[in-house]
Amino acid sequence: MNIIVCIKQVPDPEGPSDSFVINTEANRVEPRGIPPVLSLFDENALEAALQIKDADIDNVKITILSIGKRISNAVMLKALAAGADELVKVEDEMFDSGNLDSFCAASALASAIKKIGVYDLILVGRQAADWNAGQVGIGIAHMLGIPAVTLAKKVEIDKDGLFVERVLSSGYERVKVLLPAVVMASNEVGELRYPTVLQRREAKKKPITAWRAEDIGFDGSIERKVVLLRLYTPEIRQGKCEIIEGLSLADAGKNLAKRLREADVI
Amino acid sequence: MSNNNLVLVFVELAKDNTIMPISLESLNTGKRLADGYGGKLATLIMGRNIGNMTKELRHYGADIVYTVDNPMLEHYQPDCYVMTFKQIYEKVTPEVIIMGDTLTSIDLAPRLAFSFGAGLVTDCVGIIFDSGDVRFIKPVYSSNIMAEFSLASKPYMVTIRSRSSEPACRSDTAKGEIIPFDISLDASLMKTEVIERIEAEDEGPKLANANVVVAGGRGIGGTEGFEQLLDLARVLGGAIGASRPPCDLGWVPSKAQVGQTGTIVGPSVYIAVGISGSTQHIAGISGSKVIVAINRDASANIFKIADFGVVGNYEEVVPAFKDSLKEILGSMDDGGKQ
Image: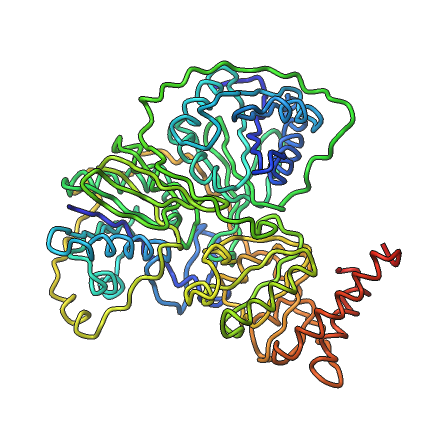
């Protein structure tokens, strides 16, 4: 069983607002002073892969695939330490996050997956933490001509195929799909496990393959379907919080209710 | 591709068979675009035994109501929905396709976009019609940045965020012309098979379109604290939410998670209790009209974006707050202020 987990490296989405700086001329966002991290839902996707590996540890191989302008081995070490077996990274100027729409990103990933060649299951996060498009997993499946299942909260494999618990607005459904397939993981899968110090040390010995765009036959000639016109800073919510006080905290609670009524909030 | 200036809105039904609020918001947005183009507004509804709702849809400003009633469309199944949508798309060739950002469209919209070779902007919070063209606005980078997009070719596809626009109002006159489509669906083309569907018990209003949300964070301390918040939510007829830690710690089901990585909400009132206000949480609540924060830490981030706040231990604040609300809302029922 060969699993490819696609992981995007993004600037820490928890960084303070002023660390996301707009370069108007280049029409791109330049993070300042915040570290790159693994995109959150992609971590969930890796956790789903590791849960499959837990059940059949000797027969499951997990390959991390990451595409970007520059990919930090130190950041990807977290994925390898958590239990992935190897890393394939494709780095190129043209993979700057703002340059790729979902169509281009899916094409590039599909090309890289074809070059890796062997796969039964491809796991991706439901959306990336920077642009939140949520389309790439379905795009990869479309381009590889294989089925896709979205919003996965649990992924299991048995001899009959792949079973995915898929989140519904009220409850969930259990879906069966034949392999190979793409599964898009949601946060309900659970947080990525935390590696031990030993695992982190061992992870440094795991194989890393580095490709360029040309190695996967990607020349950037695919036309963008979604065109970025401009970036701007949103209006920040007015930062004037009216603090409600009272003789005691209970009294403050009471006053809060009164004040909300007065202000026609409730 | 086409020049009929048709704007098509995909309408979804809630479990109780009413039109989803987000679909009414999509219809309102669609109307604005159709008027801008000088074109027609069409809506598409699909499902099983949806005759009544098809008729009801005629009251919401659409010129045409396309409807597909087929037992195989009772529940959302990607291949069936894509096949159906594609056949209709090829017949009516809309310029713009608008869908609400729902759990269905999260799956369906990208499938259609790749199938049509169309560009899609998801989770859009603003659509601008300007000199004959359309621009799409969505928050990116944890809502720290807004991005404005155009689409390179028709059809334009967009999913819009809940409560980012006003809903279409019901008019007494039913003007939409119903056009039923008889679609042939081939079950053998289904690539996924639903083995079972597990319905959760109804836990009150849905987060995404709740008018009031009461949410707790790590500061709540455990499941017992959330019981208190649930009581508060009941008094206000609101939905219960949480920041990420309580979900990861298992104090509440993960579907309660509010934020960029959970449900994005836009209620009239968001009451954040014991929530410090991480970036990704704030990204999911910034569409709230009023934010109320209760937190013992006066320097917590949440106070920077809140409109009203109490600094103190929630266990002392919330019971009195709740009783007081009960009194106020109760007196309204008794003929007080309406």
